[in-house]
Image (tube, rainbow, N blue to C red):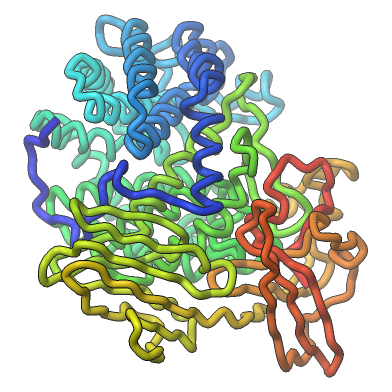
Length: 636
């Protein structure tokens, strides 16, 4: 399906099409297992996807005063599935997805309404006093428009991929109902849902995509009405554009005591739409605010796991040594970095993307592909994503996860008029027409990475992202001499007309990061998210009890784990390297075929005493549903 409306501002960087870019090696194998178990396998289609479809038939989400969020699950599954289907070029899966969309549209009301909420007027915050009778606290949950966002977006992407006008017509009917509803009610989108309307307002992105497909101005007007509420003189919450440009920490935008809830995933989702509006209008404030939010999150919210936020909130996560991050938050941090890179070509966005992907994100998808984490943590065990909302198989993070892998595949290599930009050195293959760029194994092991380029377009060059941490990087092109190249920028390589082969040796020296621990006051949110039960999967006893250090090798956080014989008393005791004079570090790669990205024997000298650890990459330290609350730790 062709777009009827062109962008005013085009991306500087062009992605490869899904189906012409592939993750290989251990990460690719994990993605393949995930696709089979959660997306394309018979169980995935006949049980997981079917259950999500049935929520639209039973419409149980608003049987209580407050509303659940079952409405998001089908859309998330379908968005993930469409992208995985493109990636694998799976014709059988494509027909399964078409049947699922048709089944959904058979449940659509004549007026276009399609939801798991029975009452179509139930789109606004609920009576918290009545909700207390059911929940025991004043839950103002209403996720109806949020769920319709995912349903709408999924229908649009399925229609585009399947080139199915009937599915697109269903998306149009749903969008028309949403637009008409707010007009007839005389309400703003930000008046609906929860959290100052941020979840509901994130519908901006699919509405603008639909505008581009149909040329119908009412969707564009609807989007502009959402955006203008984020640039208010009176600073009515959330005022995303003005507040992002203020440079202040997100939790300082308004008083937490007065109801400000800086929910990470939902807020970052809104910037997906803000950047789409920038492409359509060219209004610089939209881009500048998005870039400003990135800088705020790097400064105040960066956690040691490569993600941002702490357990689903932006609440100064960078201040805390203990780390815990929701997989949906990692995904949308990656998406923000991905979109900003496409628009600007600035390398820092891909550096942040890589650290998030190879650490927090990969840790959150378990090795068997069947399950994953709700929150990944720095120590203990991860909080496994058990089914939500009284379902059998659904969880927001699991249903979303396929999109992160496909974003990574699209990010490995991009191009522009000058040439091809290698952004990540995980094992991959990327094709642009006849041009093939392969990144071979070695990045997580010895640090040597082979790269081959076949049939480049005439006049194009190769640009290698040399990360800021690789202080002593060497490259050998063909049979030439090895030369040292600077870090922190792209390195330009001339390409032969046929095939160019090169080897890059990254500086995989161990980086020592000190993490200062301060006792967290009882009742503080950062403490509450650790469970109280002493034998529970996330008990507080797994938290740090003193300041520690963390080791990073290249982009990868290292961990001790019982998988490789680490002792509980060593990982969770009061012994610490923090404050010691660490004079030398070294690591020796242990060749293994055990499904890890890397296993290393690490040696260091601190206060003239030698220490030795057998460690692995953080993402492999506990990537299964462990019932052991003290299974691993990144802290020394």
